[in-house]
Image (cartoon, rainbow, N blue to C red; front, side, top):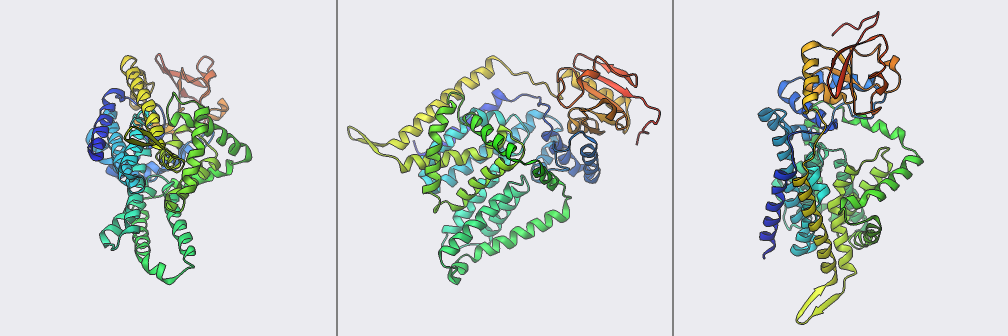
Amino acid sequence: MKPRIALIFILVITAISPLIIHNSSHGWGGDFALYLDQASALWEGNIQQLLEQNTFGLQHSSYSYYSPELYPWGWPILLAPMVKLVGLNYTWLKLLVMLFFIAMLFASYYLFRIKAGATGSLLIVACLSFNPGLIEYTNNLRSAFPFLFFVMMALWCYEKLRHAEGTSWRRIVLAAFLFFYASIIRSEGYLLVAAVATAEFIQWGAQKFSKKYLFDRKWLLQMAVAFMCFHIGYTLLLPGGSSSHFSHFELTSGATITGNINFYLDHLDYCFSSYLKKSFVMVVLPFVGIGLYTRFREDMAMAIYFILLHVLFIVWPHHEIRYLFIMIPFYFYFLFQGLQKTSFSIQLKNWIFPSSRIVFSAFLIIMLLDYSFYLMRKINRPEYIDGPETEDAREMFAFINMQTQNSVIVFFKPRVMSLYTGHRSCIIHDYPENIRPTGNYVVLHKQMGDYNQINSLIDHPPAWLSKKMENSRFVVYQINRDDEISDQ
C-alpha cells in the first residue's frame, strides 16, 4: 500500500472516533469557558467588558493563578465562527477540535517525511492517531491541537525554505504567518520562534559568522519582518491580558521543580499507552535521548524547541498531564530516530528488516490494541460528565439568570459561571467571612467537597446566608449584610 493511501486510511479511521467518544456535554474545567467567552466577545464587541469581568474575578478570588486575564486570541478567533453558528453546542464545537487533530496528523506526516522518510513518518503518525490519550483529549475545547497544527506547519515551511534553491515571497509570508499564529494560540509558540532564532545563530556561528551565510538566509530576515508586522497588527487590534500568567513564576521553587520532574516521569506512560508501564517508558527514554543527540545538527530548531518545552514545564510552578500532549509528536519522532541509529538488520529468507522498524511496529501494535479496547470501553460504558450541561446545572444557571441582575456570584468555577450567566464571579475557599463583603450570592456544588469552595456552608450556613434555591447537586445562598453591595 502506498504511504499516502495508508495515511488517508489512518486519518479516516481516526475521524470515526468522535462518533464514539464525544458527548454533548463538557467537564467543569474553566479554560474552555474563557475561550468561548472570548470567541463570543469578538462578535458582540464587548471585549473590554469581558476583560474587566475576568480581572475582577482574579482580583477578588482566594487565589489568582487559575487563569490569565485573557487567553491569547488565536484559538478564540478560530472558535468564533462556530460559536456564532451553533452557540454552546459542544457536539459541533468538539468536531472543530477533531478537525484540527486530523490536520495536525496530516501536517506531522509531511514534516516528518522530510526527516524520517515516508514509511517512518507513517509509523509515527499512526502512533499519534491511535493514541487513546490524544483521542480522549479531543473531547475538550482546549487549544493543544490547533496549536500543534500551526507548529507542525510552521516547521514544515521552515524546512522547505531552508532547503529551497529559490524562495518566493508567498512562502516567506506564509511561514511568518504560521509562526505568528502559533504564538497567539499559546505562549509556547514564542519558544518555537526562539528555537529557530537560536538554531540559525548557532549555524551562523559554525560558519564563522560569514556574510555569505547571512546573504543566503535573507529570507529569514524577511520572515522576521513579516512576523513583526503580523504581531504589531494583532496587538493594535486586540487587547492583551495573556501575559498576566507570567507572574506565576513567582511560585517557582526547588520543591515545585522537583515535584514537576517526578510528576512527569510518573505520568509519561499515559502519553504512550495504558499497557506500557513506567519501567517500559524508562527503557524507551534513552532512545529518545539518542535520537535527540544524533539528530541535533540536522533537526536543530526542532530539537531546541523540544528541549525548551521541557525546561518550561519543569520550571512552570503547576503541572498537568495535558501539558505533555504538545510534546508527544516530538517524543515519537526522536524515539524513531534513536531506534534508527541503534538499528541492525534482520534477514528472513530474501527479506531484510531493520530492527528499528520491527520494534516501532510492535510498539504500534500495542497502541492499536490499547486503542481498540479504549473504544470498546467507551461503547459499552458511556461516560457521564458532571459539568455545566447537566440538568441540575442548567436549573441553577436558569435561576441565577432569572432571579439576579449584575450580581457577584461566588462559585468554584467562576469562568463557567460568567459564560453561562454573564455575571462577575470569583473563587473564595478559605474563610466564610471573606465571602460576605465580596459577593451577592454563593453557589455550592454538593459533590465537590472543599475543592475551590467552603463545603461546610452547605449544611451549616451562617445566619447571613439565606437559601434561595436547591436541587440534588447545587445550593444557592443569597448573602445578606448590613452594608449591602448594590447590584451594578
